[in-house]
Length: 574
Image 1: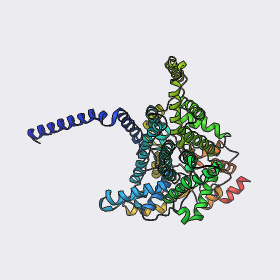
Image 2: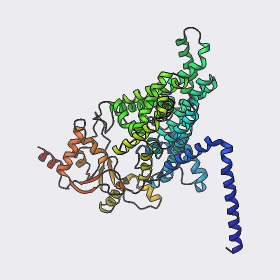
Image 3: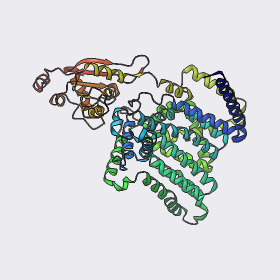
Image 4: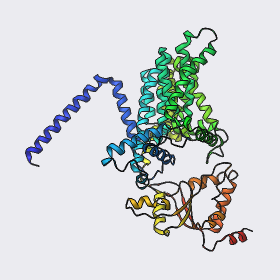
């Protein structure tokens, strides 16, 4: 490149820079300072959610449910609309499936490579990035929607500050990194609440219908969001209360059924049509999923009060002590003032919290749909507190003293630090990758392995053909996957006699399972006995624990001696 060309390039860059600066200077006049703040908050939210979004790929170490979602989305992308799986509703499957189909036909060269089961097994990275990209978009959209909800319900400052807190909220940041249903469901739920608040304020039947449809989309993404019928009914009261006349409760019930429940059901069935077309499977999976969350999940056996656990562990861990306290104050204030927005939002938060806390499965992400609403109510309570005359002069001192005390005590006061720390943590190597490399280097080809969940991602023998077609060389093994233990159930494969009969030579355990089982020995006696058998008859040949800069569970590899037979097992056991 000659000197004249370089000079011309520099001049072009300068002109472009001047135009960009002029555009930025004009931005406040175009969208206002509040709009500029919202744009900055959206950029902050996107930065936190995009940082480390590809960590761990091509393996899904962050959440095993990702693989479940992507497998069913791939089925939809290949033209099979029935997911044949209803533990989750189908909306997010459809979203990811459509995105995968578009990528396969318009982005991938000549439309090859995507969507394909072979490419998903040999290189699933593009699929994960598509699903996670949608989760990031839904997380960023949720920040904008919480701004609009706060502004519509209370004031613009409330909306801006609520958007700031949601942008850095650790739970939202964390689950925006994985292709699961929680963040998309929260986004649709916020849209429904925004429309319900607006419908209650304006008395608009059309807005109420739009809110009901959005609530149906939320329910079609995650069943829990069917609770949105409650704020929809409150909004319906404000829209139609002038036409109800006598017998208001009965007439309100009929109106809520027609104007809220039926549109919600229609939107839900549009998302999950095979709930009607395949009713037997839908009822079976829906019942099983409800049984799982009602009876409990591995790791929550020693929690005896879900209401307190969700408050003191999940909400405090997500929002911090200050925001949780302000959120509770906001709920009390909402029930005291009872404005239209208060009566739309507060009963929904309370009812949803009581419902989810009645389960024995107490995952923090189950609370994500009400976390943004709690933030809005917390900011509203803070704004109301600042207007109280007695606090006007002392407010700054109270905040400073509380922040200093929390700093000294190491309390989790505000969520920003935890969100930033989480995004930064998505780097380095997972110990399961280290274990996988070691096993592939030291185990013989075609070894027979029994492996727990959350272990190294070894290639099963029956998937080797896909790697061969793709001209990829990888070791493969005969793998018996041990089921995840659940209260009241037992995997027949988790028994040494079974493993001997099926010629299993190696057993791979993960602390993601065994540490939680051993913490609740009375609940899993058969699984504990299995671990005892392994410790007695097996030989530990390798242990992989996370070192500095590594993540993941502790992986333990046992080798069953070739002399161990059923006769030896019976004799030594006796």
